[in-house]
Picture 1 (tube, rainbow, N blue to C red):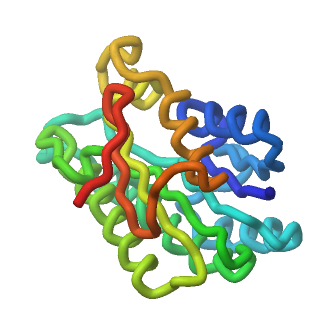
Picture 2: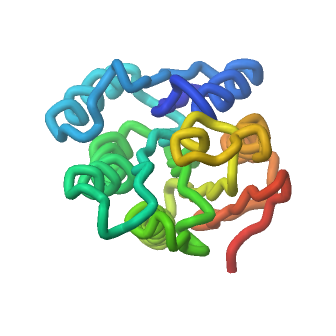
Amino acid sequence: MQILLTGAGGGIGSATKAALEAAGARVIAVERRDADLVSYGEIQALAERVAKDAPLDWLVFAHGFISAETEFEKQKPEEIKSTFDLNILSVIYLTQLLLASVRPGGGVIFISSSAGINPNGRYAAYSASKAAVNAFAKALALNKPEHTFFSVCPGPTNTAMRLKIGEDPKAAQPPTTVAHLIKQLVFGTGEYHSGDVIVVHNGKISVEA
């Protein structure tokens, strides 16, 4: 089992890396220092490097961005651009460039957010970008039956991103809860179907209709 994992340097990404490796998977871990995923050129270069290790079994995209500014009118244009560049455009490009390297039966897991289902008024652009991730996963599932696509939507989770927006991360679910679900999806031990948008909130798992 060989898996590409972005956002591997912290939070849900690092917990996922540990869970997958403990289960025997080989993880190609990508951290922020490895590639600037705002840059299409660096995305292309990363995809070319990763493709040399093909075939892959899964792509897991756990990187993301949120602006700490809670008033939409005060968000800087570059922050809004980074929100969409990192949260949706980079995963579209990476999927487009790497899906051919994924074995049939494998697929892509997108780490989205519950804010993409129930929009958060304090983070309108972030919510919109994560809603786009969910729609992208569903659309691919309809068009690419040889692969499997999931969108995992964590609720509040104990990560640096949670701290960044001024919330108490310790009051949220641990990232290991999300990592355990991702491990289930990768190894096919849960009753889920391609195109499912799966919410992990306070440790409870549900599939959006």
